[in-house]
Image 1 (cartoon, helix red, strand yellow):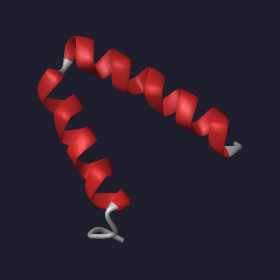
Image 2 (cartoon, one colour; image 1 turned 90 degrees about the vertical axis):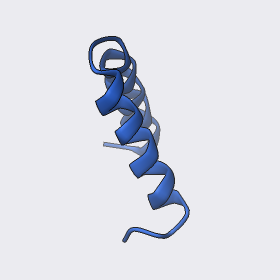
Image 3 (cartoon, helix red, strand yellow; image 1 turned 135 degrees about the vertical axis):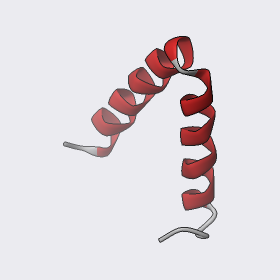
Image 4 (cartoon, helix red, strand yellow; image 1 turned 180 degrees about the vertical axis):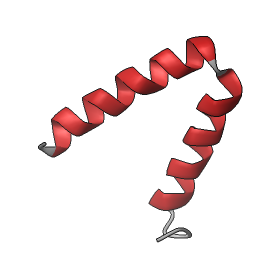
Length: 41
């Protein structure tokens, strides 16, 4: 899967999660922000 497709799929997943599992959604956002900051590898 190319990067754009992957990001679109992730975006859709996050939107679905935000509707049904707000806690899981924010946990996911937090984790991905940590990864972008290079804290998690």
